[in-house]
Length: 171
Image 1: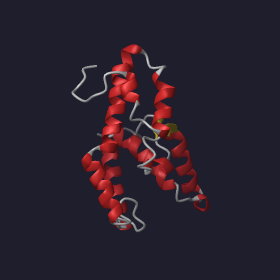
Image 2: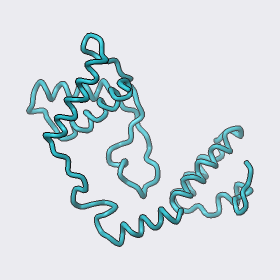
Image 3: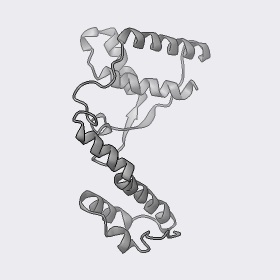
Image 4: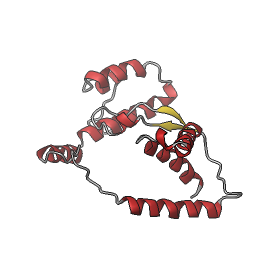
């Protein structure tokens, strides 16, 4: 690894500023990183630590804390008219239909998913990914359509998963 002035030159120097969960995670992982991947691994950590300590990030966080509700708003910060959302969905479905054969589109089934509760936790570090299945999300949506008493708000999350998979195919 080419050391920039002021950059750590040894693993010991790299480890020194780490504390708490970062230090524990680093110590648990670093010994199992293959030597040929060590440079990329350390660069990833440097980028994460830079983002946490960059002056502009710190300023943005301080500014957000000076104005309560900015970083984690208690009121919705974006208001989406549902009639417009329905129109947008209709336009997108028509676009997919124009590209699809036989009124169907094939999408990837397994995908990496960020758990909903962790997605907005900006202080917990990068979230752990889980495995999602487009087929499972689609099945839940179909059940709600067949029996509206099964409708739950989480259906929007499932719909988002399905729309993401469709969007990856209709580009």
